[in-house]
Image (cartoon, rainbow, N blue to C red):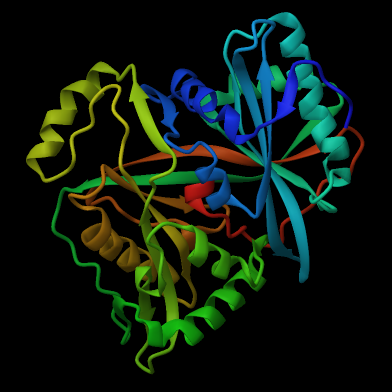
Length: 368
């Protein structure tokens, strides 16, 4: 990669300024703005998200950190092959002077061109990123300012959030399917189930990714999983709810409707959302289901995850849906909920051929 005057790769010495920048820069979403609390360790979320990361840090003439751009390196399975890909995230800028802004743009394009040549990175099969629909303005800016880069849409997605239950409604699946918490004895069968699900996904986790997560994710164990099993005891679905601790959303500029409704949610046992406070969010990780009853199984798993891991402990439970695959869409109309819609993009050089996905990818909602 080319030499830069205002850009360096982040080190622990940059931690405090990176945490401050993450708190400062907010993205606009429906009815609110969202920044992120990354303290005390900015790099913790990167370690949880992938095997390694290249974090570009941009400083203005006065030496203050005013921009970031991260490339998370992930090992995966795609079309039956083990590959490594890069995931762009944490693209943040705050009052960059012109020279630093131009270097930020050039760094982004150079990362697509040359990251595979950096020591320790290795060949990258492709680069991905996600953009929520309400942040289309940022995507347009990047498209206009980076003529050598193309954002190829791969699949629409939606992040669902459940806040509280409104109506009593059964989550039973029937057909002999039951839902229970996993134990260590379930590890071999659960590992085989997850391997099969990832092999079928458009982009799935590499075989050793689960072991990496068990070692790196805080308080994540085999007992974190909730299982759906059939009458014969075979696993037909799973979810692993976990509280996000390394990267908490901070909501600001709440709409009048959101401000008015927040006290009401507290009456129903939900944690109250306040302007400017970091939110405790539970994420439905490793969320899979198979068979003719996949949608019913997903709903049962999600309701159990909310009941046991989110209600009272988190402001919301988040999960990932792929509207192009109806089996991933969960009916939660008996809950106060919302969906934030966006698009998964492949970031390519102009003229490069995009990949095609044979099925919905198995991305982790907690690391988007």
